[in-house]
Amino acid sequence: MKEYANASKGKITFKAFTTLDIVLMAMLAAANAVMTVYLSPLNMALNGLGGPIATSTVTGLYMIYGLLACYIIRKPGTAVITYGIGAVVQAFMGSAYGIASCFVAAACYMVVAEAIFAFFRYRKWSFPVMLLAGGALVPIWFFFAARMFGYMKWGTDILLIALAVRILSGMVLCGLLSKLIGDALARSGLLRRYAVKRGVEG
Image 1: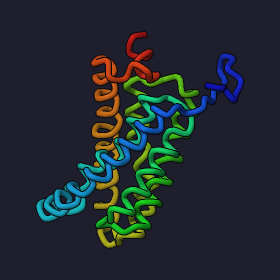
Image 2: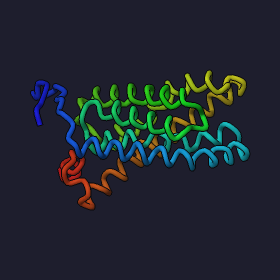
Image 3: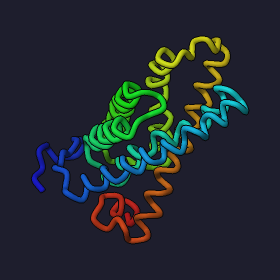
Image 4: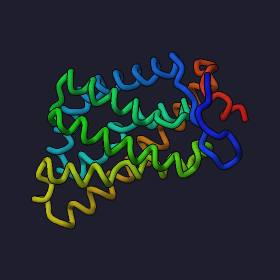
């Protein structure tokens, strides 16, 4: 595939996406849409048990598909495409949180993910980097969600605790889990044609 940018040291290298890349991104986005359907009743149950703080514990699962795609493919633009597809699929399937939330959340996730990995030139995929990325996906969307879903009524203390729990959930259930799943799949031989395989072997 043709490269579109300077590949010298310290520069971000842009590569065209392969058919396999697109298929993987679409599959992860579709899987996320299905998973979201089942997460909705879980969220309701958690809300009944522990309110907004309890529901915040599963936040990372809503974001994992895009970060996992980034970890496996390791090309600029992966988060934009994967989260974009995810928003469209969720909108068509229907969302308990409304169509607008699908696209606003996706926009927040894709911008932050691309910024984090661009900072590291799409070359560093260690546990600390993935934990940072998973946690960083949370705050901007939380800001918009607080206004879209009436979180402001919770009060400042509850908001701050919920934000902290969501960031921790993002780090563990999104960042950490993405790396663990990606590495496991790479070692299994299922991702032989993806960049993650070279990273694991290296």
